[in-house]
Image (tube, rainbow, N blue to C red; front, side, top):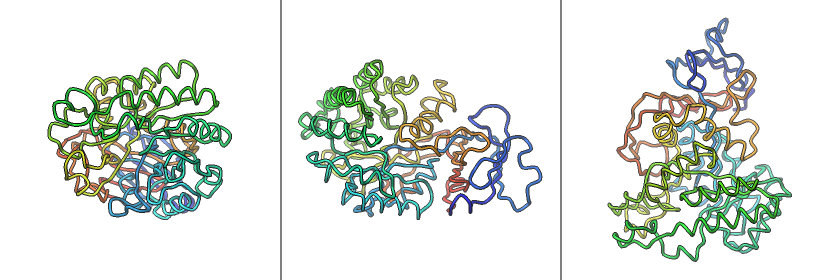
Length: 438
């Protein structure tokens, strides 16, 4: 359904950014038409009304890092099921990573992903183009063709693999600067992580797990900051996970280097003490670090050194997680639990306001990606891409009840206070009270 076909909606008793007394928000033709106590006055009785009882209204969330698995692994996730999870999590735009089968390394595949996302119609699905053919790190893709295709690819990444060759990365950055697109780097020096499955530290040593050093991430972050500086290009660091990466980001930004970074909810909340169980659900790339890393990442997100939250939503089949820890596939679900985790860690503690949360989950990621219709202010005339949050609606995570085809959540059995209770995408209510509506 296009914006012109959208119904007229009336969101009753919501608090934009969690501020002030509840107001009504009238949405017509995909845009915000009126805001105020009497915004719905004079509207027809058949207008679609939703009484939201003082819930917090935020701009719809934007995820720069989602794995939707289609094409190739539709047994673990599809664009349809991933879009449903996004809608339930308050997301109105997601960026689908390139490590599909086949990889999104050409215009045919990226345009196909984009078209399927449009057909599903629950959120904007932006395909991420691969930087190198087959994600092998050897030959650059035709980035220009993907950027000019129907999908208008805006971000390129070999996520899951690092663009480890500095000459290839330099050329990618140079081309990206000319095209006006963004290179997002999976920062991992592969020669330092051979056989590694857990953070290199006392816990991994005691448990007999091969260690993954912080230097594998930090050396690439430092290198790529310098390469971006010399190329006059932008570089984005995927899933920052260490205290050292935070310090490097501070340094690079102080040098006016065009570098941005994301952090995942699981790196904000969990640390490597979880490995005690040898449960494969906790295997992730980069690995869960130590407690002081989680604290440094939270502080960096609050201060803006880290720009935004990205889920790195990574569905896996049960047999790929219910196995020996070292054999488990790395990755965790994240779309439906991101808001509750960030709210619990930073809003409920007083470190952030709801407006701050909107900055890191909506406004900044939209700016980084160059989206003009997402992350917009809640004002009359703006596109109606919105998330409705009940800050006091305790719920317990149960993997089998999530919208994803997979159930590999590390938060199984955890209870959170906040929950997304509604999502509006292009003027349509796409989820309400834990159910997908369209």
